[in-house]
Length: 403
Ligand code: DNO
Image (cartoon, rainbow, N blue to C red):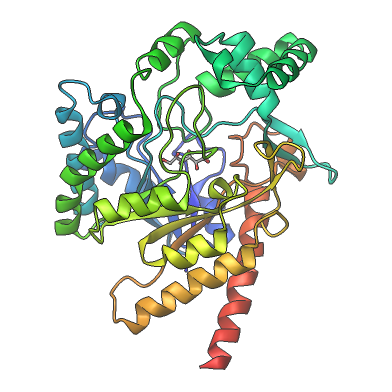
């Protein structure tokens, strides 16, 4: 396994030298300043690569190996006339990255909103803070802040009542923060930041887009990208929709094993792969994570390791738990990923290692009073990485004994 760490660029409070101290060998990054839809020029890629890879003599080196993400322009997801230019530009960015030796590309196909949480400072019994998604608060936003057209049809009477109560109990600052989390997005998001009016307009532009239509657009996009990816030996790794279900009337199409089956059946290219985001898939009770890792093993080019605990009363609500202490059996997931690497070695494949990164971490200790990118503070992720590294080492040692 290749241990990687996400870096948001020179403004990230966690520096490249900090990352070096974690023991990770690889960096996951993107050119966040380039507007969605534009080509990432080779010079800009090289400049970013230099920031990551320049190493003082005697210091451990780091490699920029994974891109998270090249954003997919909304016009592609909407199938708007003229969207071909954005597909061509996406391909050109992939080609330029390959030219610089960067060949694993995470991306997503979520319309309008990327990953979404309602609480960014949910206090845990330990005193550390975690990210949380609260279905009732989300419904309160949808129904009473956004006042989305037709939203009432998406909720039962009981849910509307609960959402109203949640809305009424929310102080103004919390309503503002909730709105910001959803319409401006969270760090690393690959969608635009909107005003509330633009957000409503954008949602309305998807009113005719069913899941089938959106899926056909994803397939059409990939059928243009994949032949080129194969020729370059680049690997695409689609990130699931987080949380993995339809939201705000928008279809979401990468949520379950059957979504993945449809995708890989339609386009069996070996470059058509996935990011096994354990926390995202694990945010619905019908996804069995070790089973997903087993059945889609050969498609997994990248994995985000993180766990969630679902609310027993309302399974659409969850908080991000410690990496090894969540509802998900992380040890079994890692065992499956190691088994997949073993299969790749036995088949004589060139790329046998899967890139993993500690996905999110609790805001804890010195980080509590710092300005951090929510989910991406240093100490919590370092704890997560250390825990999963321990599991990887222990399972790998057991495997060696068996051989
Ligand atoms: C959040 C991340 C997402 C992810 C994109 C992938 O922490 O998992 O921002 O990077 O959705 O395209």
